[in-house]
Length: 90
Image (cartoon, rainbow, N blue to C red; front, side):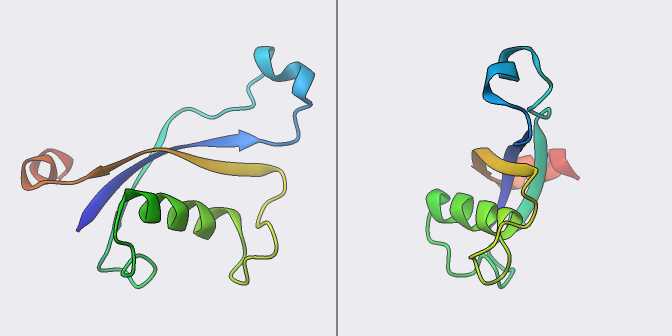
């Protein structure tokens, strides 16, 4: 099954007190993933898709190190792609 992931990137270098007036958060980003891909084949629900996507983008393969300490990716929405949405996405 195919999913549309909607996510943002957060600049973790901005001090907390500057967040309201800063550009610390990116605009909405989108990416498609499929449970046919080995990384997602064991996912059984939206929560699994979300957790796997964030883990793959935020942490190294071993899961113990952050890939990019200056940035954190956060999933906001996971949507299944139905056949009607596939036509629109193409």
